[in-house]
Image (tube, rainbow, N blue to C red; front, side, top):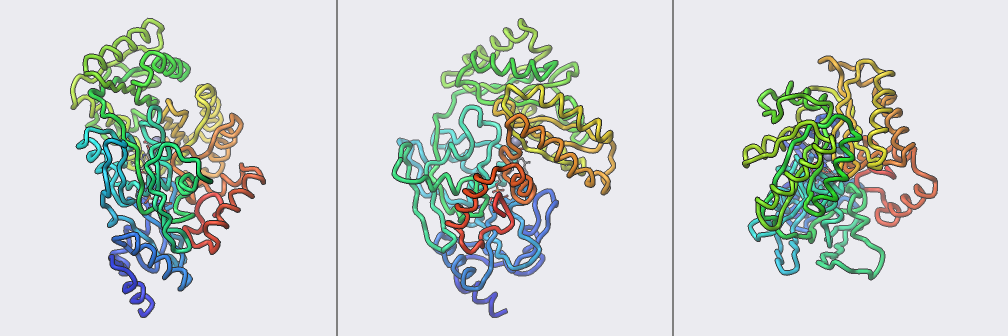
Length: 468
Ligand code: FAD
Ligand code: 2HG
Ligand code: ZN
């Protein structure tokens, strides 16, 4: 009790220590992992974060930073030991400055992503990071995971959208790197070390983010495609036809659509016939909607002529646009509703996409007849969500038992085509050991040297990420 009170008294924010109030912070959104913690601290300011870190150093506790707790890899859930303080950034949600001339905004780590998108829009700007969890994930978490989402093809991932950071280091010091500079070669890039480090090197407390001109019109189309080869050809065509106007290019299989409609029967379906594959294409235009429509229409016309597309629909109003996007964005939730699944968030060169899917689907379904392939993702980025659900509604342990063998098949195939076993969701605990398995000794030596230099006590998010 004395220890708890000394933590409570050392900073000005909220401290939770009752098991019921801590419970939501001790499991992930899928309830795949559960842990314990000494307490959950919710600081208001960067100085509060400093005090909590120093208290943890003095008392031998580790820290698990947490944002919106929407992560996919178990990285924000503490381990079982109960010797951790969960440091929730939720109350650090101030906007420090918006600079429309520099096209930047400086915000605290606990700002909800959607709030930042809306804020940018109010200034006639675009903050293009966009993912289905945007209503609850926080910018600190987005940066700590180097989140991707649906706008990477045009605007890049979270790393590309960040110019500067403020970080509380594992020594309890503040690094003020909140620079709104697009060019800065004045030393090793500390910002890039913290981005994507999953809370294992320090605590991001604020960030300076890039803003873009707000497009005048955004339009999307849903197209039926016979093969993945056709989808990658269509991507080439769309890139050459629409150039920088192409802002999203997402792929889904018929099995994904079936799963979605089973779990969410109210989903609206834009086409009259079924196909093996579908793509969702978005174009954005800085002139007007007529321009956007003409780009999309002429793209689809050429695609029909080249027999790349068998059917297509363009969203003609906001409600249709939402319906099209819902078919793609609700995939995560639909899988969660369906029960157990095995997720693989992988990157492969786009040129190898079609062969990868064909060959790996065959290997997985030959080895496990109960596997239902749920393959979708950000084709424009070479990032697949290569997920597997049980064919029946069976949710028991037997499906979990096949997970290591399935992972081995999928990840060996990824590495064989020079891909990555974690594209946008990070390693957390889900992929940490496997990532180590595929890294060279040299790369592991460098990774450990970075961890040792920035977190010599090993107190930041122990057990997570590449070094663990
Ligand atoms: P959390 O889950 O709270 O934390 C994630 C990691 O970041 C943990 O390691 C944590 O310790 C660390 N962390 C959090 N805040 C800080 C901080 N301030 N300083 C240091 N470390 C910190 N991800 C994608 O990339 N693309 C998608 O398309 C996508 N779609 C999703 C759809 C759904 C329905 C869901 C539930 C998730 C999706 N995700 C996606 C995963 C998730 O939303 C992202 O990883 C997101 O960036 C996590 O943000 P968060 O605030 O929830 O972080
Ligand atoms: C998405 O792109 C997310 O929808 C979630 O990254 C992927 O559910 C998944 O595996
Ligand atoms: Zn994704």
